[in-house]
Length: 173
Image 1: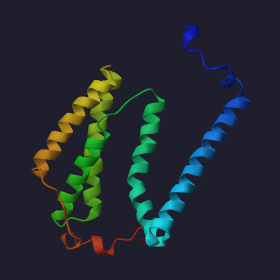
Image 2: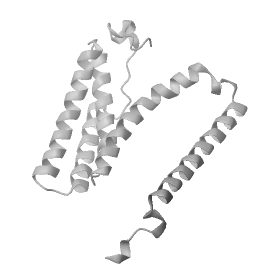
Image 3: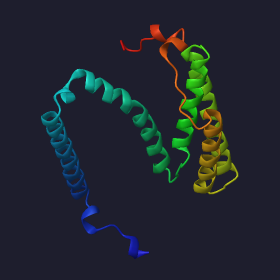
């Protein structure tokens, strides 16, 4: 199978490192250009409040991306991640609407996510079904459950719905 050989310059570690550094530099340059453009076009762009908002919103995506890196590096593919995240958000919001504390809401959200992951893992790992088909089916199932729970409308809660949430601070936030 000589057809799938890597190019010669990647067989040498030196050129692999050089290529990594070049691509890293290109990415850093692109980020710097975007920060400069954002700062010039919007006054509140480069403020502490905006940075805090960006980092807070990046937390969810970063956690899911780090898990997906592990799945991809092992040759897997999980199509149900977004649907599971949606279901968990709906469940947590509904539990908080009932006036429960966030620890209880997080417990229910993590329990449901663990169960769905366990079902996916058993079907792919033990039953040897194709991961793409299993996670595609799970995505459809979970999206249907999310839709039926939310009745097709956004599930929201206010801080007054949860008696525990106003006093909750994590790392000073």
